[in-house]
Image 1 (cartoon, rainbow over the protein chains, first blue to last red):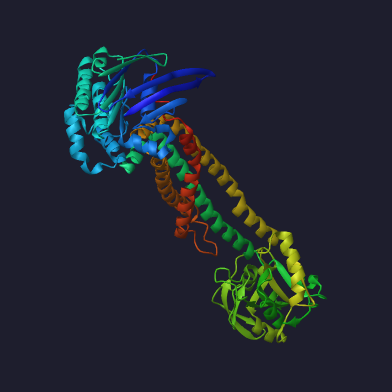
Image 2 (image 1 turned 120 degrees about the vertical axis):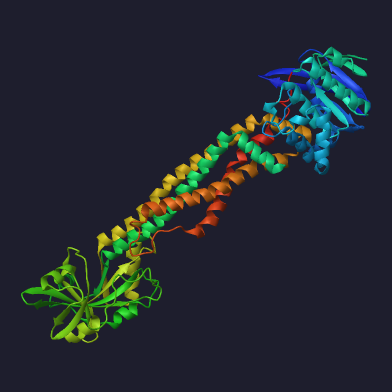
Length: 221
Length: 381
């Protein structure tokens, strides 16, 4: 379903060339739970952004259902982000001036599924244990609650593919467990999960585990 | 949801929002204050200069102006129909014509200047831009300040002139010129008293600056007048002419340089704060893009916010500027013209202009937004 073929990504920082991803090839089937692990700077986040249609590779191809994402128009790629993928970031990235409810509603609004928003938002908030926090702003929540709110936002959009970049990187064990449970439930419901993590417990959730080092996929099992 | 984000962004960076709002309000306030004040001040200054007296004398070519200035017995006479002929030509710079027949007379031990006057309007003269001289009905008169004092007569009294009775309708304020010694009566009365039917000594007029600057107007008038009134010359009272010109220049133009300065600073402020805000919100842009929001929507958020700010600022600025101009100037900007007031007809153009300027100022920040990499702030490694 989702595939990278010899994908490389080069950045230039202060005149120095950094190879964030180096000829990475990967094949992900629908419904797979892929965990990507590796040291900081190994290319995990870059890989997720490439798969999410956010970052054009320097070379190689990213294919979704055999269609090259980056050969498509900006609008088509936008449509892909809008209707197929959902991101979860390590730092949550909730809009600070919106309540939790409105943060979730924002995504539904962008995805034009606002008509069912109240029930949908409440059910996802209930599921992630933040039902009582819907009218709070992110700054009024604990770190764990913020990440759960960010996950609720992503899940409410019902994406086909969830791209989670170190979602438990800033969390305690209890909150990490909640996030892990939720991702597992989504996987069981048929979603494709691609998770970049340092957390060994989360790593074990993957049906496919890939290890990255210096931008290369060094192992896949 | 769109407007919730716009309002949320505005409230979140309330300092920047307030700064932009105040800058826009200030520039609109200044603009409206200057526009109102200069337009009313200019009109009033022009009318003050106009009321200092006519700035043109029109005489037959052979007349020696000395006799006119000193009101001697050697003044030439010419038909009063000349003034009527002149008033038919509306493209001339001269207007506010007054036919004047004058003669030095003695009443008791004092000497006065008997002045028969008749304003001759041009068809394009409005009530507000009316003649310097108000007409006098037959059998009535108007006295200069010194004439009133020397005669010991006040408004409402009767004055006997060459055996005829005239009711004193008005005493003019002191000017410190020979006009203070004038006794103004209706031209026809004067022609009858002096036995000069249909005759006058001079046409008083006022040159307006509608054809350009001082020199251009004077040259135009000297070129055009003989075409319609051959055998006549004009003498410019340069100080009044210049005073009127400078009044226009100082009240109409120079203050707008200050406005241009404030306007430039405001535009710069919107651009700089906009660029700063885009940098600070780079991550939000990245998140919105990752959710599938298109750039049209994201850019629309910023344009909508600045548009709403400009809309409110223009109305607030209009009200403050208008109120200030009225409050600060109403006590004296009443001279011979409409009193300074809120000019509501300026509001739509001010709103439109403010919104246009705000939107144009927001373009550089939006170019930056479209050019930046939304993923740069999302990558943690």
